[in-house]
Amino acid sequence: MNVFIGADIGTTGIRAGVYDEDFNLVGSGSGSSLVKRGAGGEIIQEADEIYAETAKAVHSAVKDAGIAAGDVACLSFDGQMAGVMGIDDDWNALTPYDSWLDTRCSAQVAAISSCAHDLVVGSTGIIPSYNHGPKILWWKEEEPGIYDRVRSFLQPAAYVAGRLCGLRAADAFIDWTYIHFSGYADNRALCWNEELTGLFDISPDKLPRIVSPLTVIGHVSAHESDLFGLRAGTPVAAGCGDTASCFLGTGAIRSGIAVDVAGTASVLALATDRFIADTEGLVYSSRSVVEDTWYTMSYINGGGLNLEWFRDNFASDKSFDELDQSARDISAGSEGLIFIPHLEGRAYPNNPDLRGEWKGFTRAHGAHHFYRSILEGIGYEYALYMERIRDNLSSRSAYDVRGVAGGARSAIWCQMKADILGCNYCTINREDISILGQALIAAAAVGLVHDVRETAGRIVRVENTYAPDEEKHRSYLECVKQYRELLES
Image (cartoon, rainbow, N blue to C red):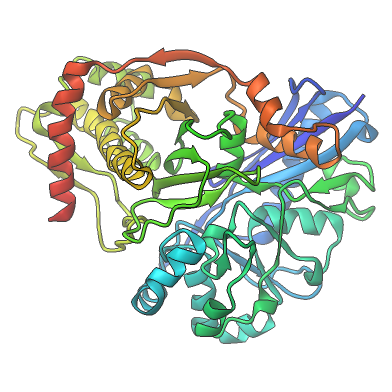
């Protein structure tokens, strides 16, 4: 019997799953993501903690599945995408994981934008923001002693995979689903852009080799095998970024399928057949797991965290289901209340000084209005993304959106997004999308799945569809207009 393991190294937790040959989840395990906030504004995670918690999740999943270690044909990791961490020659971490939520590199974002904005967008597909390029430059300028010792900059999933396999820095890798965030890549040619690395004096030797997500990057080492509950010699795939894994796990790897990842970061994406550079930076282009499909997309930095923040601070005695019910009977537009969801700055287009805001509240508004306005504010931002995506594609098509992650369990929010966007909003039959995506990659990496697109399309299906209410959609068009004007002011 062959089984496959997928693991998701996320911002709010780590999860691993064991899958049989029909991609049924037969065992699962979890670990903690220990995010630390410092007095200097840093938001980091320690490399040893990431590794130990991932090992715990995988070991627990193997035990839960009741399988022999030798049954595992391959495993694969996804992880947080926009941050960086540095390693030395022997794969020892020299830096913590500089999280995608960390905005200390704002000065470097501004510097790169001022002299190479269009070059970065045209080459990578995305504007400079809180991602690899500015972060690497921050380490170079603010911590030169550490930077000089770094032999490669990685992301958490690659760090865990390489350490598990006993790799050295010469073997360091980044799969192509991450490289739009790199700041220094030619995304279409799948190589490092010498003009960009030269412009900022970044040594290409500190950047890992670019590989397909389906590449076997090594095999579980005997030294680490017991910690993970695996057999030494088990193949390990390169894997991909967590968002790309979610898209694969929703079956959204054909042009024309849109996805809303309603999780920690609120992500809206459309699968397309081409790279699109949006120089204004509202949306960006990234690669999918399969080579001929791209995503044009954007996200709200910590958008899903807004709901937790509101509940924890203003409604700690309520569940999200109770909050949903309290907001259900409020009219579209929250009776004039508009919420800006960028509590820690806007990522795309980059505006680190933007903050959250409520506009239009009166004594007639209660907690349920404020809660509903948070749901709507994320929908309004999505409406701006969808408008730009359609403009870039020269298309007025109303794409069906597949909603996944925790927010997709909220029926009121699903209907709200359908009404705001004016398109069908669908939920699917799987909730294990990120680890399912990694299991598909693991199977394909060792030749036991020959077409991940076909396999994902076969096992993932739409279960519920929320059709837009045309009257509410017309009402929401005015709300989106007011939201845009508020952002611009």
